[in-house]
Image (tube, rainbow, N blue to C red; front, side):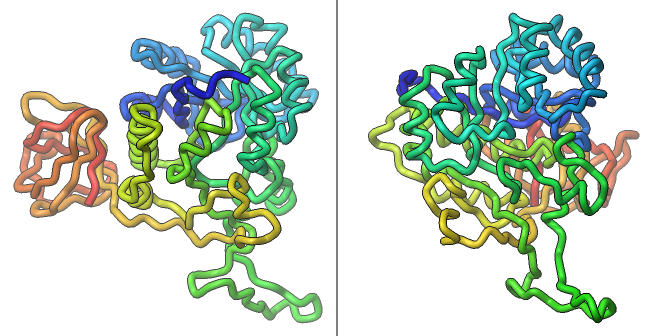
Length: 402
């Protein structure tokens, strides 16, 4: 077991190049990303070869590690293409590959032996013997199954020397370790090849076979019925217990989520971890940090299996649709001479009160007295997908919300 006194590594998702930069600027120690093939978020924007090269350079210049995902379960027809992709990645030398499949692990070790390999949560490592097997095979980190309790994780940590990582925040799959066949069955899109249709998030009704024209409500609560839809994981109030279990990597889910979710969540966990490491004995959960996490689009929060909440049916898995308490309206993409350039994501009107969450400075609230289009002309209403300039100094990658 490695020392629990090491500072934990905060691992954030990077669904595209812009999100990678946001994660880095808001405090991630490492980011995980995928190419256009072989990762389990095929419908995320992901990275072209040139974007991956740029992303690696950007992160390394700021001492942030980059982990490249190869965590699909490949069929025979995929192996030659995966080999070619690994040859390219081996030249880039990311800080690690993340794989689920034993065959993919073998190919990665063969093609790029100098790149460490992490074992994905999809491999569902749920006991110390499996953990020891992967350690002996040469894996450098295990991303443990989400179905474990912290007590079980602590026992695994005591019996292996390899680094352990767990998810601490974000959406959870209703299937065991994410190995879902519902999407393939209903839509033909294979979740195990990265093409999940999110069928578990749909609203469902019951149909009796002799009356196909009639549907019956399966009433869960007034907001709808989401019998397969898991709540969202949130462990920020339990960081001491998480870290004392022996894990090193703390992972945020969300490669397909917005830059707003990414920036707020990374920033909030960064603040909590820094406070803990500054004085573990004095650390106490901060309700304001939990409230800040609720400002993004989340379902109801749960601690999942870590503290026993989902064991033995003690907490319903069903979670309502995602809700956003605040409206994300813009991302600052540049700042020069007291003027911020903003990609507009939600309507902004002159006279609106906005709050800017800055990566490395305090938040700013102000009333928008004026704004200007790309042509320099005054704008009364800025619509989504436009670019405007605001006469205020804000850090690049600041997040604007109402």
